Image (cartoon, rainbow, N blue to C red; front, side, top):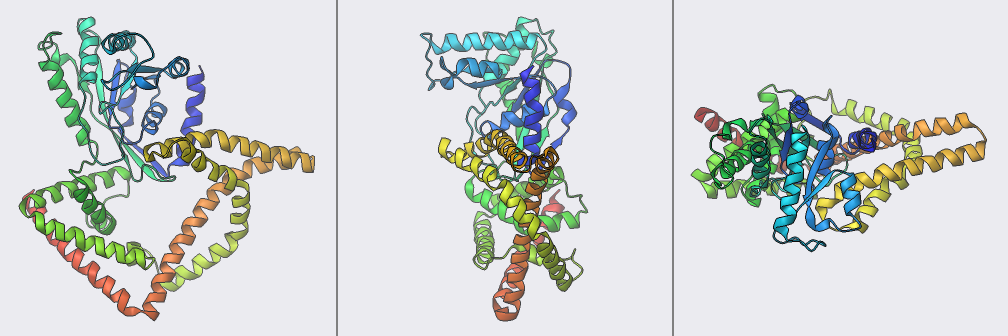
Length: 450
């Protein structure tokens, strides 16, 4: 019961934490048959939190067995976590890892036989990067073992999932959850044998291939840097050229094609792409040093620079009192979660989930204290309730106000440079034109290949 009470709280927290959370083909999460969700794992326990919140079904999780002990085991069991032990993991029980895993596998078989939903991260580890690490065979063994125990009558489906973060460790970043078509276990019935590993390896390869389709996969850090640079500089132009709506999934499709294009041309001439990466690095570094953003060259949507500045200044002046009020009411609960996250772990992969979970507790407590203080000082329940309603709204206003201010600063700096140091701005424009010329030529050649 508590699981279903906590889920709407977590859903609200996710909407606050992420600027945009988009799910592609969400209906596939809630089919009636027993399901195993398999997903990439870039962001520690933020990943299971998101997927459990999205699913209408009660989700059980396979989790690192080394964190289970006599103190944590009851808590983890309460949150539907099932331990699985790798060769490097240790247990507080005097039983071999093989026996412990055999017991865990049996729990999974029994759970799936009752039309349960199981979540597995088959990479086994969590690292913030655009890669897909080696897929372990455990998922395939559990899935085929469950069907084998039930003479392949379960109708078990494996749902591949790709989780794509814009900035996995940042508050108010974006995330796209890509749901893939189900992998059917029935087709493995005639080749599966508990003594033969061929079916397990074939299914593991299929899982890897399906997850790869749902995420951005780069081969190395240099390639990832170049692709990220192209995204920052050229992605919006591609959206305009192909008349795409500004949705996270469409952005994913565009970036996926950028990755394919980069890999294709990199094989033809790797040195050329090293030079292009240096060229884009230099351009973006020059922007950063001058306190600018590439967005200053994308003003087609603005009526005029003068109109933009007048409108922005009016908004900033009129909104300032509300900004101050929102800052006073929300600063402490806003700043505390990040401090708590740093105190608990220095690992960047834990930063975002620890911040969000801390915020779930810190914000209600802070708002409760504010409610009490206003009621105590004013002896008016109406004023206290009004404060309670206004605080989150003012918190959102602060985020909006800061975004307006940051954009205003960048645009103001570009105008100052235009009048005081036009040569610097002209140099940036020439750099950008040269990059665009290269990228446009590559795009046209790549489209001819398709």
